[in-house]
Every structure is written in structure tokens, then in C-alpha cells.
Amino acid sequence: MIADIIVDLQYGDCGKGKVTHHLLKSGEYTHCIRYNGGCNAGHTIYHNGEKFISHHLPAGAFFGIKSIIGPGCVVNIDQFFKEIREFNEKGINTEGIVFIAENTHIITNNHKKEDKKDTTIGTTKSGNGPAYRDKYDRKGVRAKDIPELRPYLIDIYEELHNNPREPVILFEGAQGFGLDVDWGDYPYVTSSNCISPAALMNGVPPQAVRNIWGVAKAYETYVGAKKFQGDDPIFKRIQEVGQEYGATTGRMRQVNWLSIDLLRRAAKINGVTHLVVNKMDILDKVKEWSLYDYSDGFGGESKVSFLDNSGFETHIENVLSDTCVNNIYFSESPHRI
Ligand code: IMP
Ligand code: MG
Image (cartoon, rainbow, N blue to C red):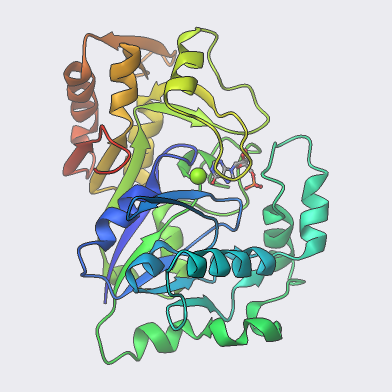
């Protein structure tokens, strides 16, 4: 068994969908598995020139690759069927392609109602937190308890470990390192682990892992209740030029410079081997290339600026030289790496 993992290194919305779509095109993968999160996630994917926003369905569906919502996720049934219909209407076949692990937990209407009352975290109000809470409190409802999901259920153990064809799996992450329940800025986090090891909780042994694709942006964005955006008017420009609005809630994403400290930590903790830094074109459009570097040893943040993309890129390469990142791709287009 071989597994590659895609993981977001900041606060979500770094362009994982694009990387997933790019990797799936290789034709190498037999399975695509979502490993954490629920319909709080919004993955924007361009397929054959059409824009799709998927909250639940793994991107493998676009390529007819068996696509599984793993037991590390939580699922809203209405949203799941809505996406199945949307994909079908746009000519994407999901029958015999899209599955939900039978031990995956369900986001109920009550979870959603409860989450709607949140005022402190700035959640996506999709019921994600209450669903995970009930799972760990052993009061949850699982996919196998829902009759209408029966045609979509799959036993992950049988599928991956008793399969005559050796599985080559692409794991699709949701949210990001800065939102991880243990490693993010608690309590301004989501209710699941978003780091690469979370993929392994979906029935795959650690020995199977090959490449870890970390995805970041050339600047940071965050959606939620805490103040995140810097005061410099440049951040408003980046928001506009970079079209930084949430795919799930339409909320404005707060913008700040990339923190090299967060990126380095995320690269190390996730074991990133391949790094994609998206939206380099946006810095090019606003003509400012800055980041926060904490490596002066005094613990304070200091803004470092460069004259162009190449100075910015070289700095990132240097800082990450003691991590397991072997390949860095600086991307200037929403359509390719
Ligand atoms: P929840 O996951 O809906 O409970 O929201 C918790 C925090 O994570 C909030 O700040 C959300 O805005 C953020 N969040 C959750 N999912 C995503 C995502 O897919 N992209 C970006 N932020 C997210
Ligand atoms: Mg998103």
C-alpha cells in the first residue's frame, strides 16, 4: 500500500483542492480519501474549465477514482446528497465511485442548530464541533446507522487491506495546521486534527506513507473571530486582488504576511516532503514581497521585505533547508502548480 498525503500548512484555504486535482491527473491513484473535517471545508476546484466547490466529496470523483469520506471526517447527510446531485448534473458520475466509511460520524440537525449559536470562535456554523464532541463523548450517530446512506457505505479495512489490487491512496486534508485542535491557536481552532498523521487514523499503516504535500500561500489568511489582519492598507489590497472570500460562508478572509515560523513548524511537524506555495502572482500584482521572520532569536516578529518574487522565494528555501522539504513549487496560477 502506498499513501501520499496533502496537508494545509496555514489556516485552510491555501489551495489544497488545486494540488489534489493536479496529483490525481497522474492516473497513479486507486483511491482518494478525505481524512478530517466536515462540511466546514470548502474546496474550490476547476475541472474541465468549470468551477466546483465541494464540501464533502473527495476530488477523486472527477477522475472516476474511488473516493471515500474516511472515519476521521463527519458528514452532513443533506449536504452529501446535494453534492452528489450537483456533481451528477454537471456530468460527473458518482455511482460506485463515492463512498462513506461505515464508521464515519454524522452531523445532525441538532449539531447544526447548536453551532449556529456560536459567537466566540467564529465557526462556519456547520455543526462540525458538536458532531466531533458527541463522537468522543460516545453519543454520536454513525453512517452505518442511516438507512439512506446504505448504498454509499464502505468497510475501509476490507477495501484497503483485502484488495487484490494494491491501493495507491491520495489523502485529501481539510482546514490547516493553524486550525489544528492541538497545534493551532487554541481555542481559535477547528475540532479535528488537520495534520498529516490524522490521515493514518483512517485505516492506513504508517509504513504506507510516501510523500507529504504541504500547501501554503505566499501570505496568510484566516477566517474566524480573532483579530488577525494587520493594520497596513496593503492587506485590504491583497484581499481584493487575491479574492479572499470564504468558499463555505462567503466571509471575508483576514490577511497578514506569511509567518516563516509557522511555516517551518508546520513543515517539520507534518513531515512535508513537497511544498507548494500558492498565490505568488498576488504579491506580484500588489508589488510587495514581505513576510514575518522570527529567527532573530529575540522572539519578536519582524517584517522582512524583498524586491521581487525571487528574493522572497530564496528566503523561504533557506529557512526550510533544515526540514524534510525536498521540493518547493512557487505557484503563480490558480490552474497549475
Ligand atoms: P469550525 O470548523 O466550523 O468549528 O470553525 C472553527 C474555525 O475554523 C473558524 O475560525 C473557521 O472559520 C475555521 N475553518 C473551518 N473550516 C475551515 C476551512 O475549510 N477553511 C478556513 N477556515 C476554516
Ligand atoms: Mg477552503
